[in-house]
Length: 362
Image (cartoon, rainbow, N blue to C red; front, side):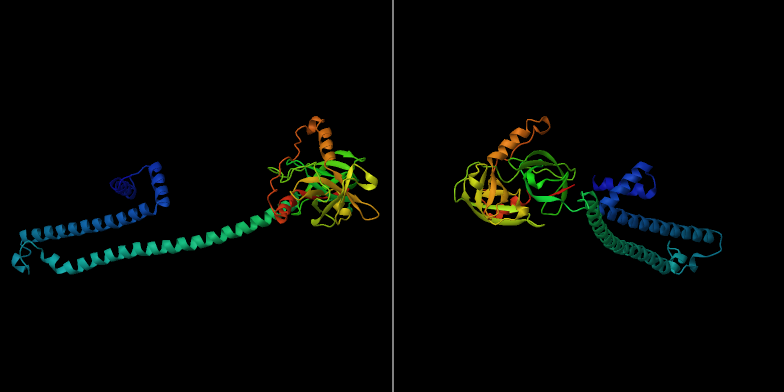
């Protein structure tokens, strides 16, 4: 809109000649456009001054008419007029007073506008300060409320002590996990991640002979991953460096070692023997090679202290068997490694999110 049109609109607004719809639209423009609002203020001041000037001219004209009428009626004589001519004596007599009054009126108008502006700015600043404080308070309340809601909506472990537990890790981004069968002795399964978030899980399959079980996180609060950082690899080499992550206590623990034998206890071909420190809670945790590929599931240690891991081959077998059930046909085993080029610390940071503390309750 051009300035002339804006001035015309401002004048119509001040005269009250706008309809209700135009008035509401123009007021909304003033709120959102400081320049337009300032234009309206200046135009109001200008029109007030013009109106005052018009009143002054009318006053002068009235004085002249009175003077002429009094002279015609012989009440006064032209000689009585101190300054002669057409300038009225009364106007000359009170001109200074009138001009001072007009000046004062103009000054008062300007001061009113200035004070209103200062007040409005001050009021705006105060309002903004109050609004900022209120927003900060609401944010704090929102954070506290969200924390309370999180505490409420997260599934809580039963009050009774868990009867078995260990570690599990994701094999599918949608929430499928694998662990040892001996970890799951109860009916209620709770999986807890490193952030302390708890999720209910259900048992999809359990193979006692191979000591493998597949779980599915069955909880509306669980957010599926876009992808998993590791893949499942069947190829291993004797003496290859390995590491594992697990929950021998209520926080994740890292351990490292090497593959010491391609067979397990008493030459069992189901498992590997690995040289690594492990405790009871590590059962079901991932065993990874230096590239970050999962090569097995840490399963147990013998009375002599040797530690074993179920070979990754049996992860593939378990998944293929489970997918025969239509309910799990969409299970997609992790097949791409995105942490191969990271150092060990970087790998562990990525893998940590996929490893869960598993607790089993009656």
